[in-house]
Length: 397
Ligand SMILES: [Zn+2]
Figure 1 (cartoon, protein in one colour):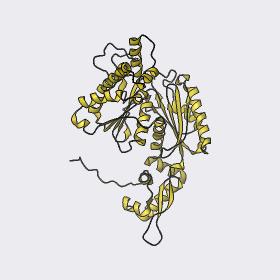
Figure 2 (figure 1 turned 180 degrees about the vertical axis):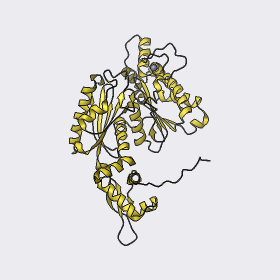
Figure 3 (figure 1 turned 90 degrees about the vertical axis):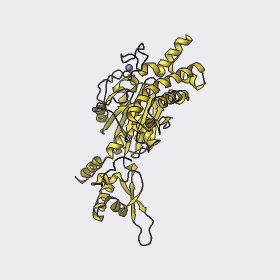
Figure 4 (figure 1 turned 120 degrees about the horizontal axis):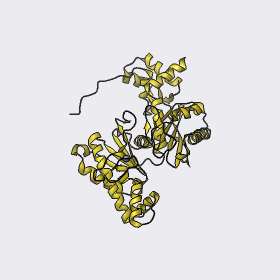
């Protein structure tokens, strides 16, 4: 029994008809008539409207069995460009993509988030202009800006909320500051969410239920259900780093609570453990370097961190039943011990139905996942049925 079948639905307006082109496959008018049940004249009018706003373009002719071959039309991703921004604690990555999320130009630089919103967002806007010039486009071609920040964001306003490593950013109206300069819509989200989205769209487009965990200085997660980010009521969903871990009630977290996962299993906490054991200062970069060369003591801590993260993830798996967990952040990429520890506990602690097809893998989308994910936030808004209808109306006005 595979649940209730969905009622058949037909795309009603041009905006919904356009969704049939999003996969990039060229279509003929006859195909659209059969698919939508609409008349020849309705289909022709929808295609004309979509071609007029630039998101659809004629692509030549389909093969035919004699007579004049029918014209085909396809999604035109170059109609606009989108800026994706991935702000980290010390490094910022900025990229331009087309409307299919393909990266056209990218730049990364050492930019300290602690320089504050005014300086950092100025730099983002300057970089946007530089990249636009580089690919031969202008600000008029820019559909919007998606931006990820290393801290919690109120999803309803795009404002960071008490971000621990972003002094000066609390409650700052990031969308307003950037759109005042660039004149386009701006979407803001936390870094785990944008990387989750980038990872899913580029590596696992077929997987609709995906959990992404970033293990770095802190620990955070992005939740994708039915192919879309789940942020909760305010944007706090996925804050797995502050789940309480049994048996660690003596460990103080930077949030003020005791026994948080982040205080027990993050890269910073492993560095602190190694410092205490060896009697010499150990940085987070040292931990990653030691793991890479197979240092036994470091690897044993990482394995244990994996088990601790596995405890939190086991609860998440029982609650959400994802089909894939992707583990990212530079500790995950340094070696296999983290993921081995996670697998050990998750498969042991979860209900059989929840783990029957569960895959747990290391992130694969690379350094640009955040840029692509941030751009995707904008693309999904820009190409949504209502937005496409709006573009058509504004063109007609
Ligand atoms: Zn905490």
